[in-house]
Length: 562
Image (cartoon, rainbow, N blue to C red; front, side, top):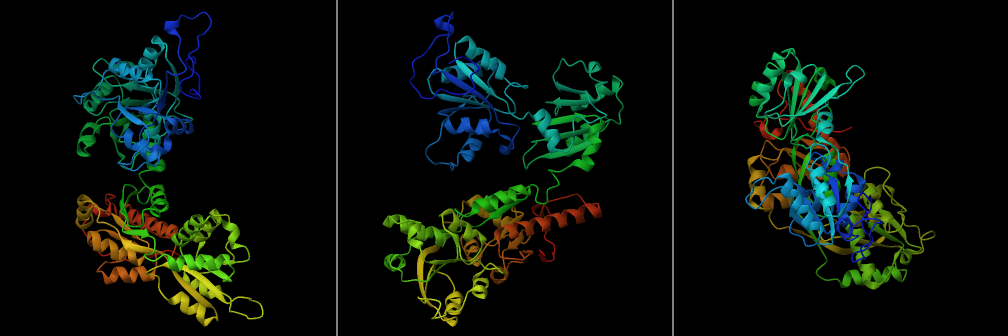
């Protein structure tokens, strides 16, 4: 395989081939190959499609920063401590904890490549933009080893973009990028319309004075952004005259990107990332582990930092005989309807079908009801279609509103199969009986209290280090308080519906956000509306925008979405 090919070898152990006219020592082998992959400046969402493909098939990942291993494991869906995934090799720091030189990094990469495995060299930003990629790739070329380059999003452009600062406009076309060091001649750069400074945090005072001495106006706008593209991003705007003092006051630390020029003034109108309604909020998500993902993804979209704490563990029923009998009855045509009141119920029945070697064809002639859109989607993923989904409120009450009365002329069978949790209420059963139906209310799964979260998480809950918590059921309220204690009064409490709100209040919690409908997406949207209103109020009153965990408890009005 020659250098620069865009795909790795199709299989390991293939016979090395030579290029015509090349010497064996300089001939890359099909087994020795490295992909230099740009990880971007921090936001994992900025990884390219090609990058995710290569990381998914890598045997070895040579990392650059301590955060890269977690990024890859998250990308591959591997929880901390779980087995599997690639081998990780630290390519950024030596055994003494000191950063490796470019030459030392190149030796690490060459050594891994010679193992004949699929190697990904993961690099911050872009491998060929202010990085050691060229030196490492040259070392591979010298050793006759193949490689490819997968460009990444460079912090040079990404961090200012996330800060709402365009590097070019129709009136500002010139951009100069400078890596700050001892030998920079600032008289050469003072006239540049826009300057992007890397590694300038420690020397920004000297740089500013040098630029002013070289003729740049002391009033030139300056912005310094640390940990850009992540939810820890922080930007301070100032002028050349005051940036050193303002950066110290804001406690700006590396890594940071600094922009000097009139384009900085556009941040006031174009700031989009740091103004997200839940930006930087640490949000507790107490749900079953299987269900937390969709909530967390939506919270991240609003700038939140979700932390999933399982409070409920879903387990099979203690006595499976009742479920076995019901499934046999379903196959034999005992039921007219099956009603699913949760995604977990769908999962439990599907697992029982797989256990018996059955598939969706067993539902032929059976009518299917779903309590809401999420449950209907789970049914659809099984290759089935729900015949009845509430047209109004997505709940047991809403399901009863649309459920037809039993008609002995139209309905050949009057029995309903209702697979549910062991703690489900009797309202749905009672309502169906009132409509003339007979119900087999079967325990399909049990919900039990999960193990307590780690001590630091419990302390954070009690001490008010979480900005918000989202409760999606009464059981999540009871179980969280039971395993971790009550959230601090400063923590914003968001609940999915009136029943959950009542349970929260019974446990001494003040409810701040109540979703208009019992839907997890609407719950997250309602919390975002609360955050947006809170931010707007602070901006309008001239207060600094802070998170709930940074303020003393205050009385807040309950917010309902419309």
